[in-house]
Amino acid sequence: MNTGDLRTNFPALICPACRKAQLEVRGDGIRCTSCNEQYTILDGRFPRLIPPDAEISQEEVAVQDSVAANYERIRYSNPWSAKYHQWWTDLMISEVDVSGRILDNGCGIGLFCERLPAADIIGLDISAEMLRVAGTKSDRALLADSQNIPFADATFDTIFARSLIHHLPDPERGISEMARVLTPGGEVVSIDTNRSLLSRLPRAVANRGEQFSEEHKNLHRKKLIEAFKKHFVVERVRFFGYVAYPLLGFPDLMNLFRFMPARRLAYDCLMAIDAGLALIPLVRTQSWGLLLKCRKVR
Image (tube, rainbow, N blue to C red; front, side):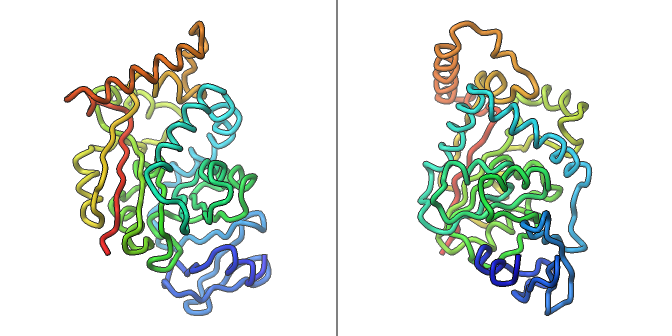
């Protein structure tokens, strides 16, 4: 990678330490000519732009590194789980105009790059192993902290944050950073965990295992919505995921769906049950997942 490639692949890139656009490639690394901060390039492809004072849970990073292979090899290779996650991803895409510049914030293994191959999309993740898998789908990805997004103000027209916020040590700072890098009138779609009767006990049990760090959490929906309202107009709140979510979505954790007969019919039935539950007052709020569609005020 050279300085020209850096600026072409990542327009409006800035130093996350001093917030100046003075980055240049020097040898096998990157230097900010304004504050002299030094950064590395992962595998010679992915800029690693994390400021020295970043608040990062190393335990969470280690967990994400450890599960990346299982995501690609099991979770998104299982045909029924893949179908469910495609539905979930396409649900987010359907909420916005994808013709502008897009940030896949917390890109994981690169699902949006896969679903939007022709889009002007950049992926960002804190996990090197997740990024290596995403790199099989796109070269426009970088290792960075979602609480210190290394892009200039008003860079992106759309931001996707798929299961990101509940991983952050400071969710409100992560939301504030998305507002900063979004253009006026730009849109953000976030899907995250919902603290509910369905999810409370499984989360407590799961956090004792190796698949999740202790900081992995379900989010209180009212607090999450209020955090977004500080920076955005919340245009849509959608609850989803009741019985289909645990049975279809996570075969790397618990693959009970493999015991079901007539799986194509079972899949359709589970999705229909979930759709019905999402329409029932009081019951609908007890979902596993919560989608927020927001717009930045002009």
